[in-house]
Length: 41
Image (tube, rainbow, N blue to C red; front, side, top):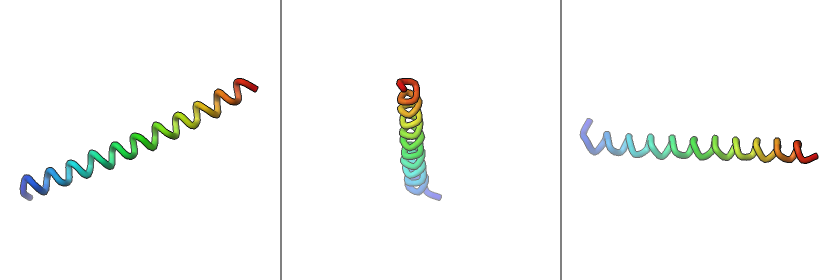
């Protein structure tokens, strides 16, 4: 395993983790919006 291979894997892993982080943030925001809507009723 060369250093270039390692960098490629690390770069891919960071992007995947970042993507899942954004998805989870979006879900949390959506859930918060629904809770706020319920509170306003």
